[in-house]
Length: 245
Image (cartoon, rainbow, N blue to C red):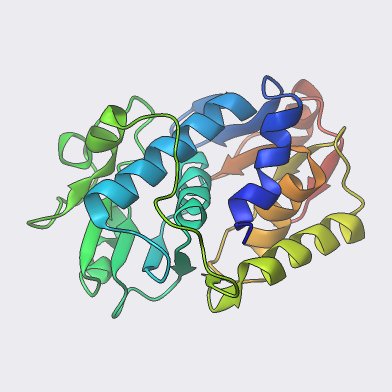
C-alpha cells in the first residue's frame, strides 16, 4: 500500500527536490526558515527513524499530535505516515503523543511522550523558556532527532486500509487532498500563503493548508502568529495564492 507520504511527498522529491517546499514564519519570534523538498524530506526521514527506533511506532500505532501548524509538525505528520501509523487528535489511550510545551499536560494520557521545543535554534525542550519541562521517560525531539539517519526504510509493508488520519485510511486522505487541490485551483507553479490552523482531522485546515498544497506540487508559505503586513509579505515571497485562515 502507498502511504500518504509516498503518495504526496515522494513525487515532489523525485521532480525538483531543490525547489522551496515550505517557508515558515513565526511573527511572534521573528523566525523565518525555508526548506527545500530535499531538506524537508531529510527531516521526515530523521523523524520517522526516531519514531520507529525510539518510540516503536509501526503500522497500527496511534500517535496523538498536539502541535501547532509548524514546519516541524509537517515533518512529524509525514513521518507518522511513513511508519504506517495513524495521526489522531486525542492523546487519551494513544500509544505516543507529540506535544509542545503547551500540550505536555494533555499528552500525559498517552503511553509515551515526545516533546517538541519548536525552537528556531534547535534547543531541546528542557533548555528553552518553554513554560514546561519534559515528564520522566519522555523523548526530547530536538535533542534526539539529530542522531538519526536522513533515509528511512520501513521494516514491514503498511497493510491495506490502515488508518492514517483520525480514523480515515491513507487512500481516502490522499484522494481528499487531491480533490481539494483541484477545487482550490492549486498547481505546481503556485506559492501558497496560509495562516490556517492544522487540526488533526481528515478535512479542514490541515488538508487545505498543507496536504492539498503537497498534492498540487505547490510551495507553502505558512505564517504562525501573523501580525505583519501579509500583503507585503505575499509580494516579497512571490505568493500566487492566499488561503483564508
